[in-house]
Image: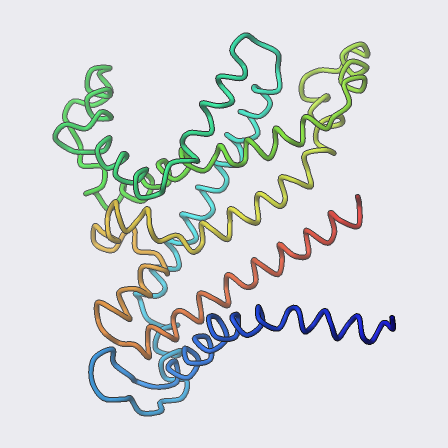
Length: 293
């Protein structure tokens, strides 16, 4: 059987999938690009061609710059906290202690919760009237009165970062723990015999095994954090005073709340471009990890 026929048969087998992808992904993307160059509204007649007016207006608007800043802050601090807590949790769960299997199973629960359920849970914790956080802090004497954590512009974003970190750091921990399981026991034992300290063992023994998986986890979590929508929408809907409005929420508001379909399509493509850059970086990291293996 010739190689040309094998290639042709492979493409024929992939043809149904390609047709579905073009119908589900390709055509909506092309139509979104078309809409982005018009002033089409969600309800009403078709819009007129306006060129790059939507892009220039959005890129210089205070709403876009504010949403970009909120998105960047959320992504940087949530991912940094998740990576740190995940590695520390993995190092702890890699040790031998009674009940380790139970603790490992328990750690998966926050990650297994649906995001909407997690958001509602933390809304109850942050409730300004009967929330568990206010009750704990007042009983410890840290606060003198209850605070509205999700109602204060200076605190709302950081409260959501904490909620997102609680849900997603177990994923990083599981990835890091899997990498730690690949470290040969004799290498760990040799490092202890050589009287290497904890930091030396982590730097020279464990880190070479952790670097690749953690790089992939870092890029994946950064992409997810940059296009965050659900947890913020459920907890604050972008408020108060737009202090938690991210780019994804701005896309939703622009297209559906304000019914500016053309402007919303432009903003969606801008967000897609930014996420594509992260995705390209992720693919490059995957190829680099594969070449080292």
